[in-house]
Length: 266
Image 1 (tube, rainbow, N blue to C red):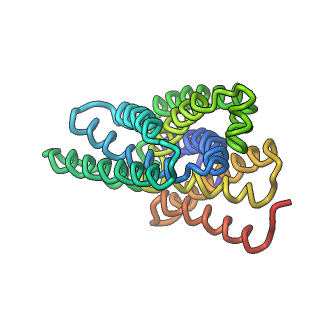
Image 2: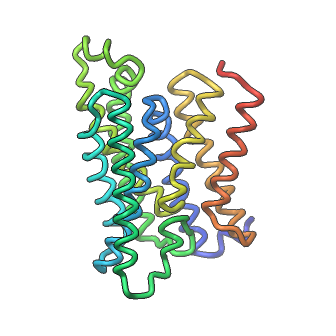
Image 3: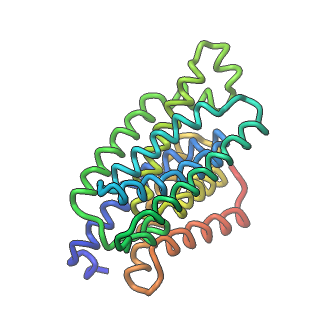
């Protein structure tokens, strides 16, 4: 374990993993509470064509991740009509479009897109110190916004009708949360890949909500679990031949199943 910290690429990966785990754990807790896991999954899929489009245009992948997730959050906010069936149909249609665009951009890229697997399933070999700084800034903004609005957001998430009656701007909070969730998805996609980002957003939060119903404790547990499985996944990926996305997802799933079988919410 001590030898891991002698390699700069591994230090950068652990730093980036720590950042994205905390922001994904906090944002994911609210996402699960608000029953917006389908929206989070859609944003994760939208990250793929964004990164592929950036590669096609010769732009930094980070620009594609964050730009596409921001636009995707705005699009999701516009297709929430209140009717659950219409909402799920519109969200699923957006997912299909995202996958089609991702395939198109990859097909039109005539160079050597050696990072295609990392776009989809993640990697830790290419994380740089510059990416760590960018992730730290994005995570700081996302966590600051969630911290500033967490009480009204919690109220609106638990009982939107009562919150609306008390004058809470429910729709504005919903839009703001989707934008913050987009930031979390874009940041996490750089480590886990677009297809496995869902692991850090859902399973740590779901595990924490099985352990406790207290909001503050649940948020802290969600971030701690996400951090634990991220570090564990990075160490396993370094020590074995298995990719980091698989390792992180497997650890998160195993912990969720264990807690679900052993405990009930207290």
